[in-house]
Image 1: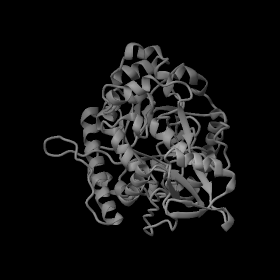
Image 2 (image 1 turned 180 degrees about the vertical axis):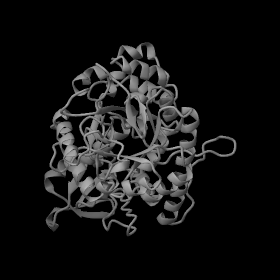
Image 3 (image 1 turned 180 degrees about the horizontal axis):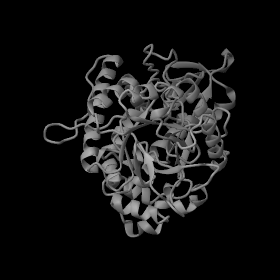
Image 4 (image 1 turned 45 degrees about the vertical axis):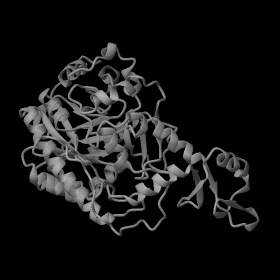
Length: 457
């Protein structure tokens, strides 16, 4: 297996890419260290940390009375944080490797944040990686700053749509295409409505299809970055120097969490080192509406259980039941379960946008309503709070079956208990406990990890 240097964002580097994990999980220190070791470091622009004059993390508190006001505060935090992390990454990298910034297209005010960060962190950012949506305007925004762009896609069809509509006008700055396997990658996944979350497709077939589409657009030399399910390169040797797939690089998202430069490894290490096969769940609980893969923490288990305590509302007055002060006409097939839930304390019915009610304990219901009220517009559209940045509201009632993603990701990134928060991870995270490299709870430096990866293991 030969892993030679490859051109990324204008220079030759190791084709090893740090995955950009949002809300302060990949920051300037981790990405700078990855670049310093000769690879491509990636910090996240999603709610990145900024610092005060004493070097302390600025707490992201919101004082605005309206969602729109709080959204403006969030944008200012986001811009300041991403610029701060970009400058740290450049300093730590010592101008080695490449430093990329990861942005989530569905995050609130993504286009404005990209523009302002690239303006405020000139010469610190060499590439922008962007997914979680269809980033049609990405190429135009990024190329204005002579920065390369790397769209994240999960299918040849998605890339074709992006290229035909937008990217073909800005080909010179297309640095690579990130293929993120929707069944293996952590975080938000690009499963389409036509694909079965329980029926994974061989990534080789999808990569060949993507390369064929790219070749149709004369992009033979543009590398594909394989993301999702990458642990040992020896397991991907058939993909290297493969004429059907063309030039490739490999992205390490989950594995790069446990390095001494990672801002969260001390908090996350016990949980990650205890995972077993099957402990990562692919669900559609995210307020974005996308599928996502996360560790089955107490929080995730509670959300899955909440969805089970759900009854359909029917148009039949003979099926009316009194629950506290409310009268509801509920599907009689769930009647036995309903009374059992109420006996167990789940006495608060909460309406959903799908003409159903879910049942929660009163304290849980109170917290859900409070989180929905405190929405700061972190997404372009949120089903949990019914926020929409274009019109102010999705027009649907808030969905209590989801959660405030801003709140939980801020908590887990800043010493919150991983079991009580959302903990994104790829589906091979259980291998921390099995890989001999991590025996005796060993945590490598980023350079040690990259040196190990290059050996194939």
